[in-house]
Length: 95
Image (cartoon, rainbow, N blue to C red; front, side, top):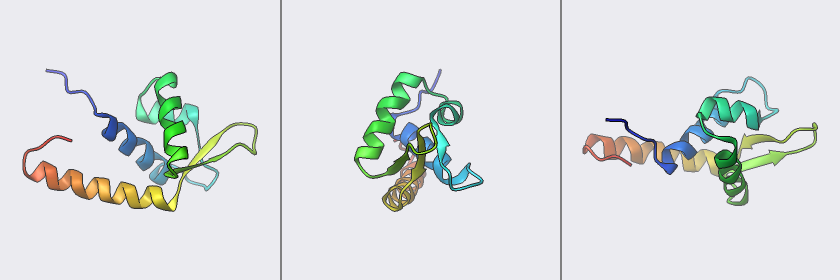
């Protein structure tokens, strides 16, 4: 049986990628996030818009292409999400 990722898992993957996968502080391009999160352009565009409006990601358009960096609030959210995911997993629950 194929197990699909939940919306929260995809958000966690995007935030983790913007936190961990970048060697510099320039931010991640949409293409980079599409590859790492394994998600379509249409879907990731909607998610990125929501994450920026909620303050979890910061968007920078100064270098010709939009780049995304995790914000301080995004780091706090990701930490809480990962803690809760581990807690739920210990009880056999899927988030």
